Image (tube, rainbow, N blue to C red; front, side, top):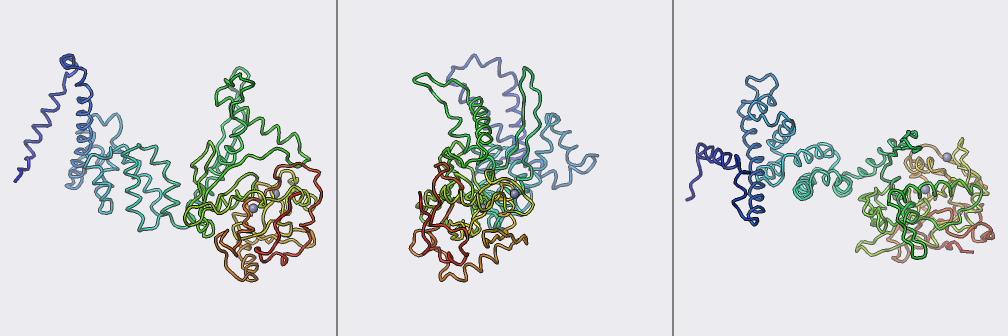
Length: 480
Ligand SMILES: [Zn+2]
Ligand SMILES: [Zn+2]
């Protein structure tokens, strides 16, 4: 049987290791270059072992009450007395991680620390992150989340751990957690006043939530691409191209305030599972842009789908693309024009944001099978668009007027009123009789061509909502 080494022998070995390293720089010349890498590796192993053992010893001291016996600053005083190098920082982190590791429910953390797999600094971020999201996870998901955090910490370090939060909330969070997270961030959006940066330059600080960042990046993407001219390369640095693209965006937006947009809109693809979208679970992922891989909550996708140029690619259960939501899903230029003429401005009472700054909102959400017709459309400014989706407000069109029920949740009763007339619950789009034909991610108010196209006979703004209760039978919008 293997003899377990006694503590006193181990302490002698530790002392031997310390003296082995003292003054090592003076003898490095003796070894060939091929020894340097392996030596470095040995030191790495030793460093991990030291961290792990430090946690073990501290845990033992805490458990025996050693750390609180005499010190004024309980625990920390003891740590600093015996580990003077931690006076430069790190004692608090070590203490927090060690105390977390001694808790019964943190067995995975303890194992990761004591095996030296995860260093203290990275483990501290895991503990912090877990404290932050634990109450938002389903209880049975906690072990999986520990595992994900710790293995990421071991492989990629603390920063990767922080970036994992949206994915963890989407996958393991209680329903709506990712959406709530993203919703909360919205109120923190800010653009600073210009600050003199010297030399006639100005600095701004812009803070955006994930949805706003996604929209901005989708718009900047094509505008900030390098533009070589006839073999002459575009040598502008990326930051300069992005800055100039932003100004180009603003200039373009303010230079044609009275007309329908004529330029092709920036396009962003977001994938999301159909069931997730319906149930408002999980998350969508942006693809095919410089911003690929950003996770967006289902509520954000429902709202983004009402915005120009955002295309949710809805995936079926096997991951096949069910609907790319382009073309017939968007309001035609003629419909958009009719909507501008009908609503004139944002339709929320008291808001006067003019039509050209508004989105066309589906009063019957695309995700719930709503058709793209004027009887189910209303202009909303960006702010009220978010607001309407957030509070799930119902709007109705009567005699060419949009009226809003501002009671939070009114959309849900409106929706059940609509679906009561519908024989089947919504199926996956593309599966036959479901809402696939009218699955409508883009109540986009402009889709490429400019003003001047004739009125669209397929759409009568005054038709009653009842005309379109069955999304499977309504005609798709015609393109001029
Ligand atoms: Zn909308
Ligand atoms: Zn408004």
